[in-house]
Length: 215
Figure 1: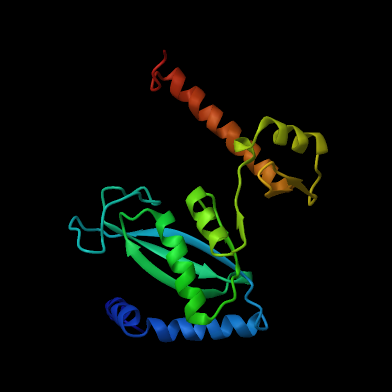
Figure 2: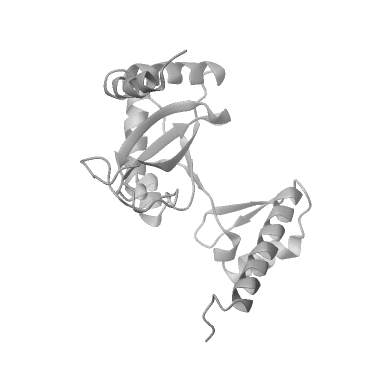
């Protein structure tokens, strides 16, 4: 049985000396599983915090996705192919703006593995207007997560008028030329309704106990 401290010590070696080799192995496996067709990639980031108070050149305090804003942290960026098979990763300073990592990371991975302008999929936090423009300038296609509540009243009305059923998908062309693909899943709708009602109950309880200021 491996000692946990030995595993932690090996992580430094893994990142400093073996990272390129591990990425090559992961990419080769990915390519084999997908029969050489790595045309779509998914990019996301997460934060990893440390139970320490001291910062260094990499570990910085910043926006923590774990809610540990007082702890130094790092950002981990991961790129995967269809099916969730890993292609590559990198680590970044804990106080960096995650949107700034997208273009350099995608370009680095594309050159390293000779990818031919894959379709980039990411959430709206990463695909900002500046990043979308940069992707378009570099001839990348992209898919970005969207929130219907942020769309125009006209778009919302078109979606509601369709009254989609479970598993149905509709496509709308937006004024800027982009396409909005809307899918409806019953189980997601049930979950969202539950979360809304739970939020309302929590707010009502806070109001009754005077923990929310009333103006």
